[in-house]
Structure formats: structure tokens, C-alpha cells
Amino acid sequence: MLGTEALDALAGTKVAVFGLGGVGSWCVESLVRSGIGKLLLVDFDRVCITNVNRQLMATTKTAGQVKADVLAKRLKEINPLVELDVRQQIYSPETAGEFALDEYDYVIDAIDSLDCKAALIRHALSIPTVTLFASMGAALKMDPFQIRATEFRKVEGDGLARALRTKFKKTGGMPTRKFKCVWSPERRENLGTADNDGESKKRVNGTVAHTTAIFGFALAGLVVQDVERKIGSLTSKNV
Image 1: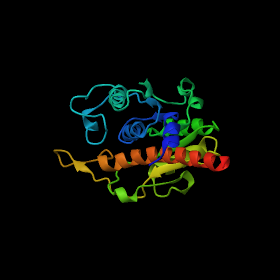
Image 2: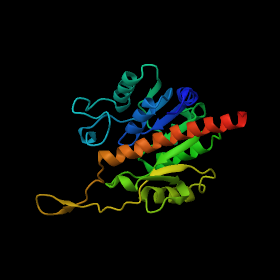
Image 3: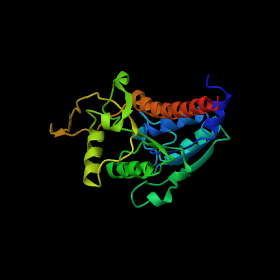
Image 4: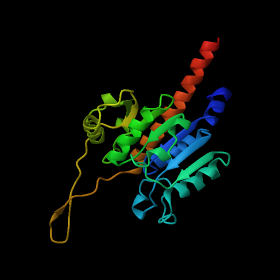
């Protein structure tokens, strides 16, 4: 469908993915199955049994194992030739210097932490040769048909995007470069629960596999589409 030239371009494309949870894990799987040749996988965490409902590599057998390592093993089984740089690390303002983002064509932000997310976005956008795609909040989303991709400034009704804008304004202003986000405007009540004494307790924001996976697949799709677009642009210039 894509043609040999585009497949060759995908094989030569380098993508850094930060956050390998419910969104990032599915994104990485799609990237490898689409022929991306080199990936940086970054996540500090281990698989928890509570991840089984939504994360690709989370099973009852992998609980307790390092997320990045479990995912890397699976990816190598899909494509033994894929080059992987696997890091059990946290990306943060303090560790930013340990990641040579200028060596990558694309950066995928699938981080949950607001401070780390804001730092990664600023870092990636400071490098002219890097294209950034970011995930906004996938929690409390049930309707897959509301998921979309737009430029960050056009995202409306997303709590994470709103918090990011506030963070940016307080720490140097909005990024000067534009970037696309995957997000959903769906609003769903975070229902409380009760303990044995009938006291109301706040429930952790829940997620389901079909929406987190679509977020991840959409991010991978943005990469593949952009690579194909660039090939088309080069071809038209050479005609």
C-alpha cells in the first residue's frame, strides 16, 4: 500500500517514545509493525497487576517485570532487526541531558506527569529537526469515536492540555513551535466509591483498553503518515 520507497523511509526513521503505559505501549507496537527501524523506549516503571486492563505487555505472568524490557522482548519477536535503546529511566528536567533527542526524527510524548511532560515538550520543540506528537489525557474516556488529532492550541475541554497551558504560561510562555496532539473532548464523571463505613472515597481516574490503544495507534499513525507525506513531497520536487 505504501510502496517500497516509503517502507525504506520508515526503516530509516528513528522514533523516541517516552512513557510505555496504556498509550505508549500500543504506539510502540504499531510503530514496529509499520517498519520503523530504530526506537528509544523510556519508562521507569515495572508492570503492575493493575496495568492488565490496558497495557500491551501487562499480563499475570509479566507483573513485577520492567515494562521497557518486557515490551522490548515482544518487539524483537515481531521484528528481530529493529534497533532498540531501552531505558528504565524517568524523563525529567534533571535527566533531560541524558537523552540525545537530536538523534531522532520523531518524539512521542506519552508521559503522565505534568512537570516531566512539559519539560519533554519544550525539549523536543527546541530541536528544529525533531517532530513532536503528544498524547493528552486518555483517562475517563470511553467513546473511541471522539478521539482526534489536532494542533495543541486547538485542543478544548481536555484537563491535561489545560494544565499544560497553565504550566507553560508560568514557566516561560507557550512553546513557539506548533505540535499535534491526540485527545478526546469526551467528558465522563469520575464516580466515587464507598468504604465499609459508607464514607465516600475518590476513585483513581480509570482507563479502558480500547481508548488508550486508539490514542497510541493514532500517535503511531501520525508518524507513518508524516513519513509518507515527506516522501511524496520529495518525489514531487524531483519530478
